[in-house]
Image (cartoon, rainbow, N blue to C red; front, side, top):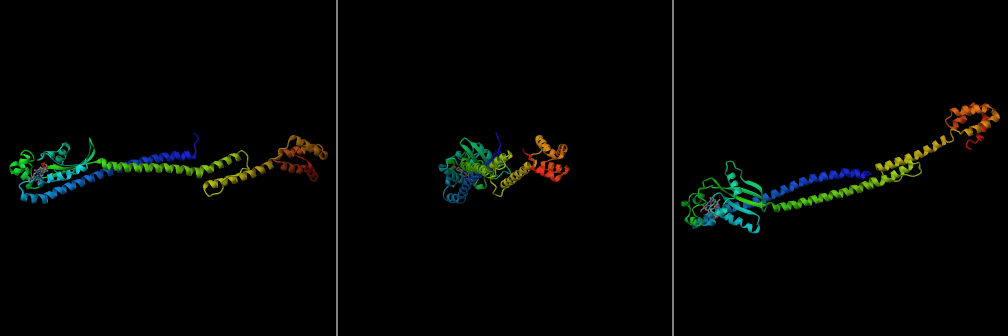
Length: 359
Ligand code: HEC
């Protein structure tokens, strides 16, 4: 295929755009995923904060007022309050989950699953982090999980969680004496676990990602179209006639004028330079054809001249003509040499003037 300037520029432009597009794609994808992750985590933290607030409120306000009046009411239990309150959000946000998970729970619904158990054990270790967080792929999608520890911080907890004998009778009646006992002071016995689906934030991030990429793609395509139009308008469209004229002139038709000489850019300058060259070439060829025309003289012409001059000079004429013609480079020089060599310059001059060299 014939390569053109347009093609060459496109060969540079298109790969450059593809590489740029790829780079932007990778970066934007990362940012979008990162944003989705942070947003999900932020939501999880918000739920956790609400749960913790319920915990604290129950311990600080509900529990004292209830225990003052009643022997035991489950509504005074902070873990229960949080599970009941925050757990209700699931009615509206089905995929979201809040769970108070314990290794040895009083209420069976609080039993930790495998991941939660692991989290509790991790949080219970010395020098454990303040929270355990992980993104997990579950059958119903991707989830960001956060777990924070529940520690037996004061002796009051042990009334109901150390031995069954110490716990209120009504509580034993309701929960039995088997589970939720044997906890120790300062021990991490459970964790609050929040699971937030990544899908919500991820869908938004994907939407943003696709939007940005489509826009970028469209921008690149538009740029390519503009670049091609610019190359055509600024270069191709003006070079083509210049080439055509150069071609015609190169074949000897010097009278064809160069087009597109107005303007100040490089191509206009090139056109003007070419036009000057065309004119100079024309002049050179004109003078050239004048200088070289009729030289060397044909043998017949020389013979005619010898015969003409022989009338005056006799056989000398032939010698003089041959000598003058031998060293001359043009008709003019030949005449001068002949005049210089002849005996009667004046007369010779007249004869030469009358002599027709061109028939
Ligand atoms: C008056 C008795 C009582 C006291 C005091 C008490 N709890 Fe409980 N706790 C319970 C009962 C009953 C449940 C089960 C509630 C339910 O049905 O969800 C429970 C549940 C829990 C749970 C959820 C896991 C499980 O066992 O089902 C945690 C964690 C917990 N308590 C921690 C504490 C801590 C920490 C304290 C001290 C700040 C404390 N409790 C004080 C009675 C008590």
